[in-house]
Image 1 (cartoon, rainbow, N blue to C red):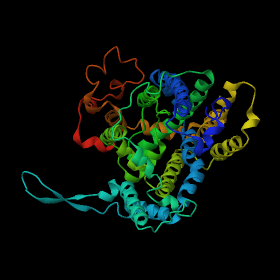
Image 2: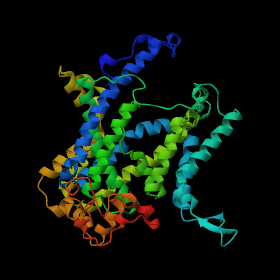
Image 3: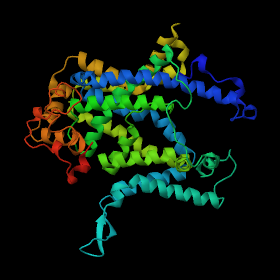
Length: 473
């Protein structure tokens, strides 16, 4: 949207000496763009909610197999090798240390317990074994690298010249952000004014929503695989896509400048920490709320040096790529058909967006809305690869076993899986159970858990057990 001629920034904004960030003219320049983006996100989010809550995305799942999911997930991370390398290359020593610590904690020390003092009523003081490195490998590595960068900054070991190599590893490069951030600020809907709507903007964001939904379906399966949970049933996927649309609607109303979707980098974090818990997500949500209201806390995280983030991305993106490729274990990769579908899809998912980014003028048709939709879709590698994988896998002749659909469906139909799927993907703490699950009002809702179809006598949906938090999605 912002690359269109209508929304290009005025020339005077490129000269920092001519810009007064507190002037009404400058404030209006960026706020009118935010208002345009707000309106487009809010309208596009309604489309996503319709696709999710109507069950349309669940209906399409019957045509989505490993050869569609694998390139979609892999292309989330593969196109980012350039940005991850650039961030890490700002100081390879700090980046290498971050990678080393993540690998050390998550792979070599994950089964090493750490004695932790625990106090209880029965025994006044005792020690308990806690697998610290398995639960917090990324957080520990990030904090240690961050601390080292701070020490090297205050001791003036890192260069203070912005043009010198290693300057970006300093923790004071964004010090003005921490100083200027308010202690307390409560965001509210319409804080930038009344949102505006344009057809070009709406179509562009809808194209992004389509890519987001394709990516999210792959993320759901990836999360399930990483935590050892059964594949998500249709009602869970419908509900997930619908709730993501609701999140986009709220983000647009609040004027965040973006939508919400499943964050694939967190899939990589999930694979390293091996912790998949609803309670963790709820706790993280409260932390983010606090960070959003207390400006100083959020600004403090902006001081994390870019090389530390780059080193973390090298590990995360590698994990995401591997998770995507691991879905091919269900398909027969000795088949030349499957090799062609996967290889062609993933290569086009890298080549086509790269060409379109370099030659955007070649796609001009004279219709502004069409140009924007085509450009957004063709510059999104996960959409290009996922669409080609979906198209080729469903049109080139091949048996169900060869395509991996047979093994895919057998996992979902395993005799032990339905009960566990009801436990993992049902509403937490018995919400919507007993009275609502069997209600005639909810039995036709495509996003509502289907207790009866699993033939479960006493379901975990009716309970909120303490021992199942590690597998709740």
